[in-house]
Image (tube, rainbow, N blue to C red; front, side, top):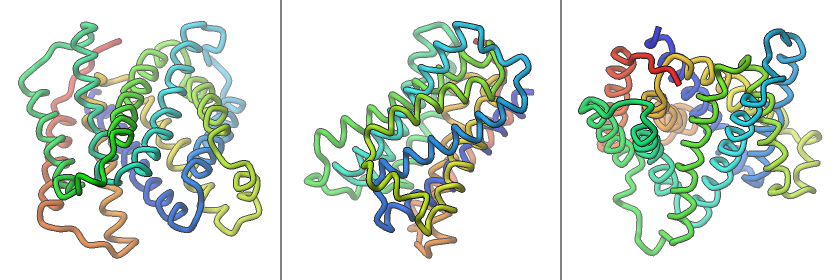
Length: 292
């Protein structure tokens, strides 16, 4: 059922939001963002590779198309992680999040151009409402112009572009093999790519650090479990619907900040959350399958 697929994508986004909170705590504790991103991918790879070893049947590893699309998805995930952090470093979290979540627009336009799905007023309204919700939630309209650099804006848009890349990569890899095979290949690419961006001394210090359990939990929620739910759910819904439903992630991250970190939400942010949740809920109930 399409609604089940949307629910799985929403659960994946919930895990991403929680993992974002964990990553934020690690970075605030002094850990380099690229070290955090690398361990998210590397621990996810180890978990997924173990799953593949335990369940090797019908993996599809002999299928060249599986490898092509899974590798593309891996580069998409790695690029999304890397450019998102660059955007934060060059601007602000609000700007970075807003630009990265331009992904639904990118996915919609690509899907329309490739004939994967037909444009409908409902999807257009859903995208508009979700983008409005993101703007309210991040309060990007309060960002100071002198804190927004061209590099930060470019990196944020590239994060959204790579977000769209991994959506299509996973969508097209899904029919050719098992989720564990697809994700093992993708996260091998993620770990290998991000390793070169991380500080080596800090990277090798993690196994002996007191924060190691947080890194493991980050890999479990932010890679292993979340992307498994995402790939399975993506089989049943269109890329556009998946990209919109995944907007549950910033909502979860915001609520994590309130519940765990003691942060407060302004009235516009609450309205933004309500818009996103309402739109995603309605879209999830009415989504239909569109095979790749």
